[in-house]
Amino acid sequence: MSRVRVLVGTRKGAFVLTSDGLRERWNVSGPHFAGWEIFHLKGAPADPDRLYASQSI
Image 1 (tube, rainbow, N blue to C red):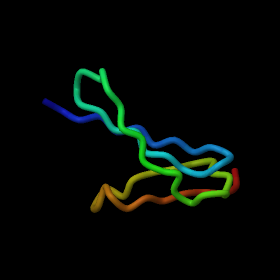
Image 2: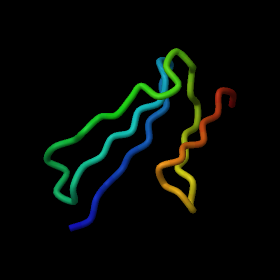
Image 3: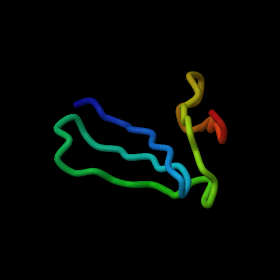
Image 4: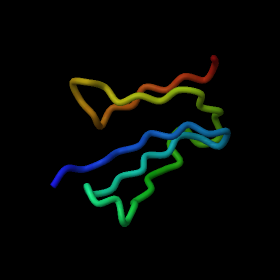
């Protein structure tokens, strides 16, 4: 079954939410970049474990 990953940027940092294909239970990882306001978050195409984050619009 496939996995789902949602990358979330907030005023308190970045969070990575993961789940299986049924999306019944979610695991939350973070905060990454704690205390930073994150406007945009993206996983690297070559290495999905690497995150790119933007602090400004």
